[in-house]
Image 1: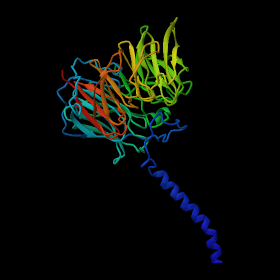
Image 2: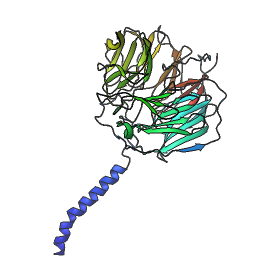
Image 3: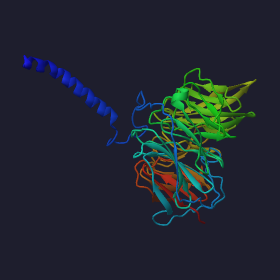
Image 4: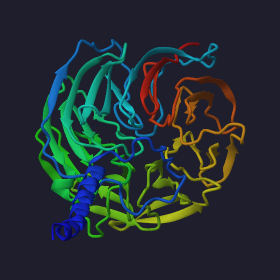
Length: 464
């Protein structure tokens, strides 16, 4: 009798044990020890690895002994002062490096990710992640020596997902706006680090956390934070001072957030924000958030590069996953605006897996899927490519003082002329150990800030 009862209890015991083991596995971090996925190297999965749960922010401000540098150069947002990844400073940069490369002024460890920096008033701002404390961290550091001035953090559980932090804060002399991996928005005092307001886009707007977490970099324009949540509102404008939602764009097609960032554009006297959402590219009125135009000729759920505003109504779009690239042209038709395709290029001619191309002095520069730095004219013709001897993977690039700085995946930095006459390498040096030296570059006051998966460094690239 007792034996019979025990036999009946065995299946129940096994079921309970299995449920407990399944729960423990789900609660663990399955990504630990896995090889980091290279975007563009596989087929994009259908669902995000982690959609995130709405959380109330309970932030903490910590003060440190770092001091702002007495330097005036600035790079206040993703892609710099004019959203084009081109330095406008007159600081003369060296065209020759000593053996070992430019002088490293400082280096700091950072949480796993690809988030680049913003620089203003001698301060360096970075959105980081502290795995030990399970918190997003906005760090303000000294441009002089990399020491922390303050940190603002709030708890949010994030699993390793091919890097964690990916976004660059937007900074003014009063405000800092940052977008965390799971779509939490914070607006802080850029000097003191004190919180003005925060948003949870998942909870408040029905945002779906993108694949590999949020990659969209927020914009501050005329005192307003401009963010594209997707979900219930395609785009929103928030008063940086009060946190009031000034306008919300409709989202009739239910387009979702991508890794692409918003780019401001002026066309025929109209200020707009151009954005590559999951179902197409769209122009949103800066005045009231209305949709001025949209095009579904370019759509990609995992779009990473941002639109490149070429001028004269031209917008250059590029992506990975065999999407290639496209040039759109805006046309005014009465009171309406229409977007028409000018040309489309196959990925082997030009595409961009991860880094946004640069429009510079009439030509477009970017790294195409085979890793070659490439120069295009505005008709879509390849002017030159750096050849198979000079490949840069998914690394970032920037233009300053007529020079192009380009990094490869393993942390080798190359200096070349930014010229349509050809690829002319001037210098090369191993700067970072890698892996994944993908964070957007920053240059201010002749100081070049780079990062790989776990470390950020600042180089002195000034000189005759």
